[in-house]
Length: 134
Ligand code: SF4
Ligand code: SF4
Image (cartoon, rainbow, N blue to C red; front, side, top):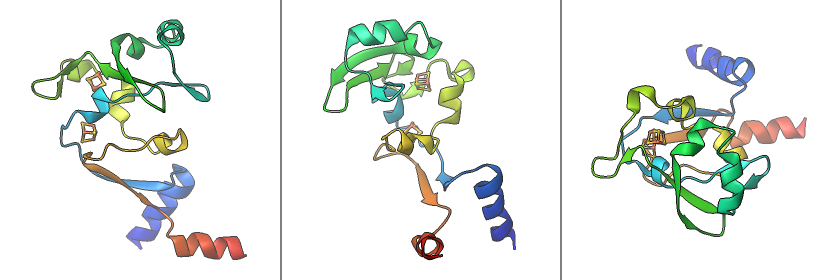
């Protein structure tokens, strides 16, 4: 019964597709391997990013550390590299407090390979398959 109520709450009230389980193990990966997505595109150039900095205070913390096939890679300057701890932990922005959220999948992202969190689909493959057959 509890499982069913939990499922209804997450699926229909919170409109989630995944349960988030686990906890942060403080690896710091999500603070040093950041892509910035604006509207539908991942930021590709520093010129583009300079304009975005005005839109969100969080962006002012970021510095470019590289680029790959996806786009520019940023590291947050608030990360203490020696300890993997956030230097502004108590005042960290909401985006960091809520991380990770399942929307990262919709934006084409994924969890870091060492992340202590996991996302599990609320509906099993069989349930989705059955509902498609109806
Ligand atoms: S503000 Fe802190 S928690 Fe947020 S990305 Fe930077 S180091 Fe990580
Ligand atoms: S990647 Fe996951 S485990 Fe590592 S610091 Fe970020 S939230 Fe925590």
